[in-house]
Image (cartoon, rainbow, N blue to C red):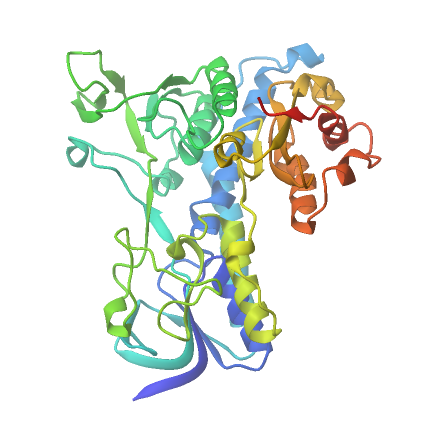
Length: 459
């Protein structure tokens, strides 16, 4: 005997709770099924805990560099990692409990704890109980994965998830993966006081970005003492006494990178392998992602995939936007499409990188006539006042339509200032709407009109 609902949401990540509440508020009897922690990756092992740790690391960094600002700190700056972790845990617990309380306190929402698996196209089994609904929404997220690395299975290693349990300072943290997750942890632990080495297989870190962005971020990290090794085509790892030794050469006897602890931050995989999707007729691609259409519906009508599992975005904000698209289409009679979404994201090293739209390299590859402008952060009054002038800002514009194609701001408050470009692009405004605006002084965003005055043709 199955219990029937109007809708079932599987997973309490970023899209799931908001969607369940919205459906319930529309009068639908809605079940939300969660097998582990409310809030998903963002709340428990991603955005919220890592940014909390970043905040602690920044305080230590600022304290060490206080003297040039006329502030004297008696004695050496020390970091108590147990207290750092305790603060992080408290922030995470409050967020997680908030999500669960919200759901349990919402009329028409039934919270079910357990592991959901399909028992038919519109039927789920959870610990021997069966539930049916005409609409089912999958928001089950992703987890860390590791590329094939010789010797990795024989060596203790950490992931971005298990790093959340660390309450000590590694003597020498070796990070495999020079992209967004790996670089954030690298800078963070260097500021806590650990020696840190980053190993990246590509010729440069964060290779999806333009080379000048990669170079600028590398320069900031190396200035702080992070050791970066790129072009490591053949990575192997082995035990080395109480620590690990990492080989980075395909041939010959290149010196190994020796460390006390290893963090593997080189990929993620969707949590779709234990949902019994075949029982519902739902297919996945070779990597386990669920194909969806522009409305985020799978090939089985009435079954939707939101968030990390659909390969249409791997961020908290894209997952939440998936919810917004689905809810608007089902409840508001709109025809919103995921393909209309402009890519936006940030890298939360310090200073941060804010990004929207296409890179300069992508625009060049398209062959379209375009304009580009660059300006160093040293021109920004806010940056000079703070003594944080590293980085630059850049924008690429369509030469014919004057529409903004993409922008990058690597520098102080770049993750906030980038929203000027984001809103203009979503509104379909020409770059002149920003260029002619009067901005508040002294801020970072006030230099965006000045930046756009420097536009010149791509060479």
